Image 1 (cartoon, rainbow, N blue to C red):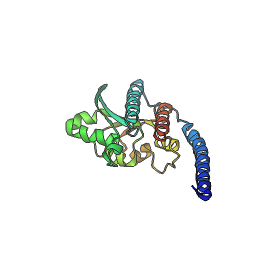
Image 2 (tube, rainbow, N blue to C red):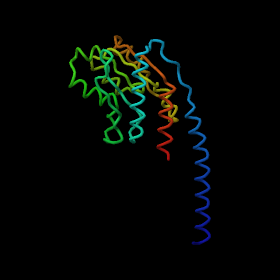
Image 3 (cartoon, one colour):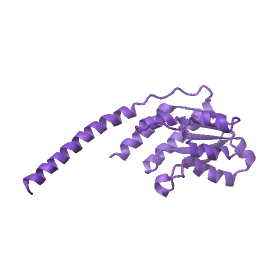
Image 4 (cartoon, helix red, strand yellow):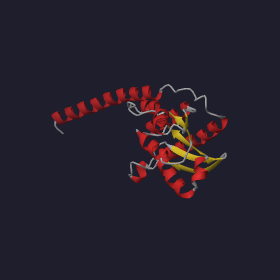
Length: 197
């Protein structure tokens, strides 16, 4: 190997080392995002089911899925659970809420859906909010807020908070969240670190 090629490789390796040092510091800063306090409207039952949503999200991340999950609860009983399957399906619309509600609207009556609560590990995005608007679901509880989750990934939040959006398009829908946001942000930080290994 010529001296010039060896020198160029040395420069490349040095630049990689510098990049990794700075990137590592940036990642650490992103994982220390401050969580919002629990929504005062959240109940003990809400906290119980958000814990389950977080458990599903953590399991999804362990399987290589994105760390999001949703469950549908009717009269204190879980009717259905689903994960985000975007990575595995290659379909960018396969968010946990889309997967769950697609199945639930075929399986359960409008009456049951209208008396059920949708629990999500993360605040529904605009696409999912549009779908939720088209269902008879009357209540949503989410874990981690979209704004803080985006910060974990070092991204700017450009969405509309779901509470604000539903006040405009479906004011009768009750939106509760965040709930146990610290735990939700931790799941995303762990997932991000795992993806970078």
